[in-house]
Length: 129
Image (cartoon, rainbow, N blue to C red; front, top):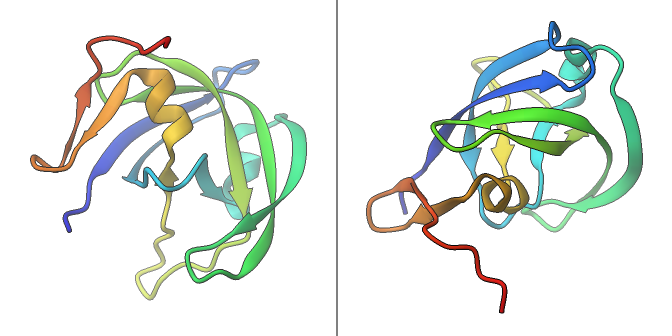
């Protein structure tokens, strides 16, 4: 199975000077944009909306902090206002974190996963049925 990596620009909604550009793995099985707790201060004052239990891919659980609002620009898709999940993460041997873009941000931005082309595509219509 191929990996889809998306470019994001995340900006504190209340303080546009606090921003971060990054690449993140698209994970349609994850709900949130997920970042390491170590980066939380990058956004300055961002409201913590909730502390939640998160089930990881290996079925272990962790505590995470949902914060927002964050302005998100996902590639060439429309900008959105979203929540971000901050988790305690360990970087890999290269010092990199596995950052995720989950289905909530994808749906809000009008992006869909093209499994054959291993890319994100624009959704033509929103389903309201």
